[in-house]
Length: 265
Image (cartoon, one colour):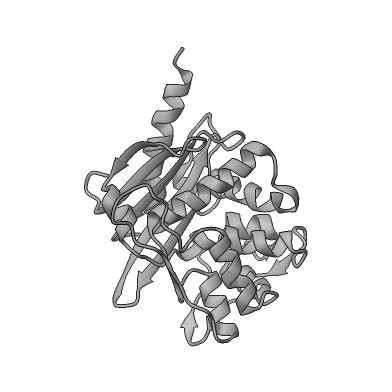
């Protein structure tokens, strides 16, 4: 974290014990828009309720404007037709915005609350609870699903939500939502979170880049776990200034150190 303002927290997936932390109080106190780090939970809800076939392919449509907000995708134009796995790996705003409209405002709200994103984790004192507004129209539903409006969470709440995903992966209870877990692995292997890639160990995770309501500068997030096949640690990196790939690069140092520790007898 040298040269960065923000927070980093590493926890044990099974015990929830904090293994390492920098600015833990910041991770539990700052309320931020999660950006694309929210996408796995939206697609999980859609697939587990039978409203999205993981193999369905949709065209990425640009330019993408939602309620007056321009939300063009950051992936290259040659990634033109995507399924759910691809949508997570390449963080396709167009795909997620289109399929999210299969949920009504109450279903989306419940899915995000079920993930614990507006609940304190208990990992630190004076922790704040996230804020999730009830969307009033289709544009607000789409912007919330993209983590851009109507929702603010703490980095610790995101970490706990991803730890629960890691527990599901360990238990093999991913059922119809396997494409989401594959997509998080692929995001690191070759997608938008590739900056967290570590040779010799599979990592799963997601980046998020968003701006605060009163600040045009973006903050960056990375949340993920490793080893992806049977997760042992979960990591969140929050940079007050920067982008998701910047946070993923910081996380890479953590995963690399952990990979070296695993090799020791």
